[in-house]
Image (cartoon, rainbow, N blue to C red; front, side):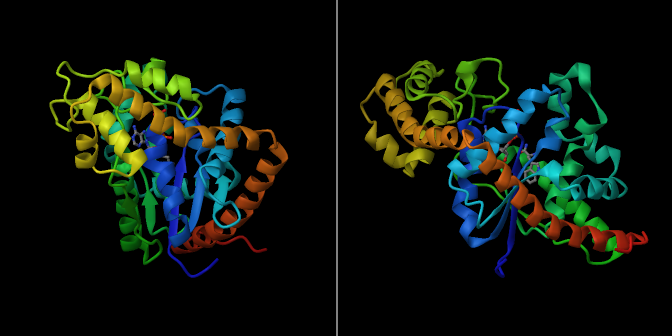
Length: 333
Ligand code: ATP
Ligand code: LTN
């Protein structure tokens, strides 16, 4: 690999992604990949913290591999791999668990939210989720981690654990920085604009999935919840319209001022159709390319195999260093 800084990120294959995942994460992966040695993981182990149907999980893993590539990630240049294929992730999690305190995990917002949502399955993995995420990041001596705003707290923990380990055992890990995009880092639900758009929302009209066809996208935007006056301006008092404006601006690279001027005097109806059309024009070619890639499983398997081999070399370099520092006898090869 060239002498560039390392970027690491991951997404869970826990369903069909939404435009929230696209704007908050995927789109930035493509933008950043040339400036870094980039490592993109499919966080399949993370998904097991909530109940999964095994067959669907396998399908979603291929879906996400294909989506990464369809969104412009070049698997020759960047590393694309499945987290479970590189066992160093689980191994480093164990070591980091020994320097992490339960209180740090039980106060995590995502843990609290997901515990409420999955009351019947509050398992140790759900609580330990951020430690596995820290292991993902720290294994690669990562300097930059592109994430949506909701993952900021988890990144802070990864930094804290790196600093704590380094203080206790000597310099071992790089301390990573987060990268949260300026626009649309938190895309809100189309049905309840006070809540984050989420792929696991039971209301299908609340999100735009990367699998939605153009007519569906436009239909969903037409139904999006807005407020009563008919002005298209960005304002905290107008969460619905503000959300649509930020989606529109993120997809067109326009500023809020430009969009406000463009739609001055126009009604919500026209604006919603315009947002739908812009989003569909970006999503549709990605959807088609993803579906084309999915017909070639052998190619996707090859990408994941090659990615795991490259990732493993980097990961074990760090893991061996860690094992040595904590006093484990290294296995002779
Ligand atoms: P779920 O809704 O099933 O809990 P999720 O949609 O949050 O999952 P993840 O796989 O946890 O999906 O997230 C992948 C990436 O997408 C993360 O970087 C996350 O911050 C980002 N992301 C998720 N939802 C949004 C959103 N509404 N707006 C912006 N970024 C988002
Ligand atoms: N928890 C992340 C997915 C994730 C991740 C990571 C992101 C797993 N490991 C490492 C960045 C770096 C989420 O987006 N929900």
